[in-house]
Image 1: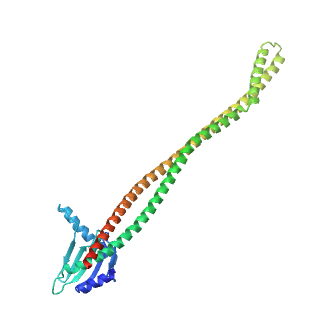
Image 2 (image 1 turned 90 degrees about the horizontal axis):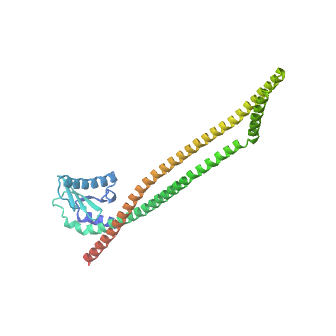
Image 3 (image 1 turned 120 degrees about the vertical axis):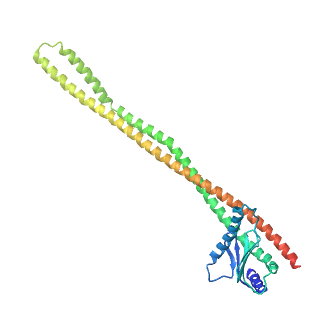
Length: 304
């Protein structure tokens, strides 16, 4: 249908040698150009419209949506016409003996506009579905990260519980030396008794024997003290090591929670953008469909 309208337009106005139908973002809908960089033609035409709008802004002149732009040289005329909410038509003329009449083009513009807007609606609908899919994926990712944060938070009290159990296990091992403790108590008592007996002994030989025995028992007591002290020190070191490891693990979990929280913040920003874009697309589709119906009714009326 579009090609047919293009051919009719060219037939009605022979001076037209090229036609470009494009959207406001520069996307080419259809064109007679072939052996050129077609995407750049659309981009530059769209940029040209934006530059004129910017000129109004810089000049502090109240701007309104454009209806047509004309660029004329000695040999050529480029006429850019607004045909829909987001659709445009660029006509490239070679100058003839008479100026081309805009009114001669109007009969074709409504038909072209209807087709272009229909295509844009379909493109917007496809984009809308794509954005909804991406939004759903973002929301699923955000939920997974929130669940992961909750899981990691639940690990923190478990670490404290594990540390407490490990400390209790180490301390209970230290208490599992009743024999050594009892031996120490007995040795201390025995040495004390022998020292008291030593004061009552007068005979030198017997006194020396008792002194040697006391020294031997004191040495045994010293060895026993070292065993008990070493066990206490090892227990203390083990507890300190366990506490340090637990603290390091806590810090790692907290870092991961913070990273996840930062990711969620970014995801919230992205989902917000998606919601805004989806809302705009839905509004644009609704408006375009109303305009399309309006054009169809006007066209049917004009054909009666």
